Each structure stands twice: as structure tokens, then as C-alpha cells.
Picture (cartoon, rainbow, N blue to C red):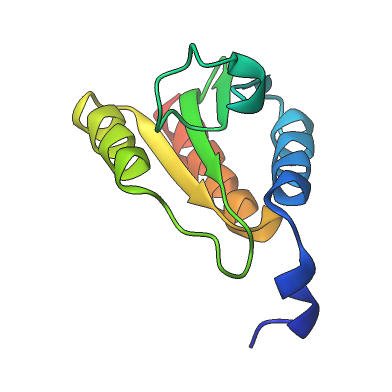
Length: 112
């Protein structure tokens, strides 16, 4: 059951938490902000690009915990990344991303 306060959480707050977690797990993070792109960024590109020496490259789209939805162009970007063998995560919470990162970390260790 979700916390009723989740409806007040903005996407920017989710994104800050995701970045903090990625950095804690050793990822190098780049924010790909639509507001800062000044009209030069292709619509649909994920909010976060992260790289890790053992785990590879990761594209993360942040969404509000309640009410956040992927647009059609974002879904198209996700399909493109996954078709190229990349990893794309749609994350509405730090906990969801943590689960995925722990999964990737275990697989990276097993592959060594």
C-alpha cells in the first residue's frame, strides 16, 4: 500500500534521490534535463545517464511516485535503448532503483 503523502512528491525530488543513490553505488551520473536543453534535446531522452566501470551504462527516467506516466516518445526511446542492448529503467522511487542496482551488482560480480 502506498503512502498517501506520495502524491505530493514531485518528479524533481524523485530524480534527486535517484542521483544520490546512483552515486552511492559508484555510478558516474549525468543529468539530461529538458529545461536546460533550450530546445536542442530530442524529446523522449531519459532524465539520467549513468556509467559504472563494472556494470556498464544505464538510462534512467524519473517519474513521480503517484501519477507519473511515460509519454509515447519516452516509450520509443526506451525501446530504442533496449533494442541496442542497453539498460533503461523507469523509476518512480529510490527503492525501485535500489532493487535494480543490487540486481545488476550481483550479476556483475557473478560475471567476474
